[in-house]
Amino acid sequence: MRDGQLQRLGDGDGPGVSHLDAADGEERFRSAIRSSLNNARLDWQRRFRQASSETAAIKAAAIGASGIEAGSRLQTRGGALLAAELELPEDRCLATGDERTALRGAFPDQAGIVLISGTGMIVVGRDANGREHRCGGWGWRLDGAGSAFDIGQQALQLSVKMADGRAADGPLRQWLWNALGCQSAADLKALVVSPGHGIADQAKLAPLVDKAAAAGDAAALTILNRSAAALAEATAATAKELDLNTPSLSARGGALEHLPVFHQLVQATVIDLLPGSRWHSASGDACDGALACALDRSGLRPR
Image (cartoon, rainbow, N blue to C red; front, side):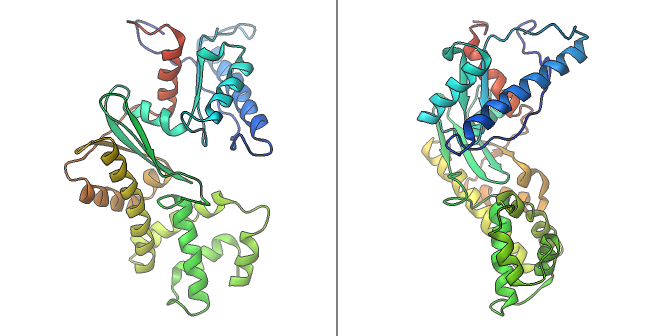
């Protein structure tokens, strides 16, 4: 911290995490902390020409990770793992959902709603009094509508209907099957149950659907409209719970950032449901939000 402002010393990437209750969830969580921290220290040493034996003292830490619900036992467990890995008191550590750090980064001290659509989806908001509400994002088995996975899943479901005559065939089916290396619906059926095929593989199909919609494919546009409506409905429900009649909104996640047709549909549908709402160009990301949360725990924030 310098002159009352946060200063980023180093950035470090690490491996992905999984739900803490997954078979290797705890080890993946701890491995991500270790790798990210070590890489951030190396980056700090490079940027500021510090000796390799020098380290920056850690006063507090916060992490945003998928699947950690605020107020849940997993949040307590994640905080304890973070504290143990960094050898810090537990009251100096916070583990929370990555949607909460995204919200804090986008709206540090004001009311607003963040729409996140990547592989999965979630909407989270805060009112002027600090009360928060999340909507959606309960995992692909229960609640994936509005995500890149949802777009890809709908497209694959349509492709098998095209293949057996329940829907008119079109170029979208061939684009999807070529991307997956499939020649038939039977190939596709075998692929989606294979151990190496996951939800991320179906999410990667979303750009093909967006491309088809941009080219005038009516079936692709229907899929995007359905997914956009689901994300907009979650946004409207969040606004209602928080009594935000004309909320500030921020879009996050790969689907909203890289699928132009989908993004436009989401914006239009949200405005239909929440007239007077405003899209906010926030500069802070989830990392900025995590840093702010860590500063809250550090005791260093200026009063």
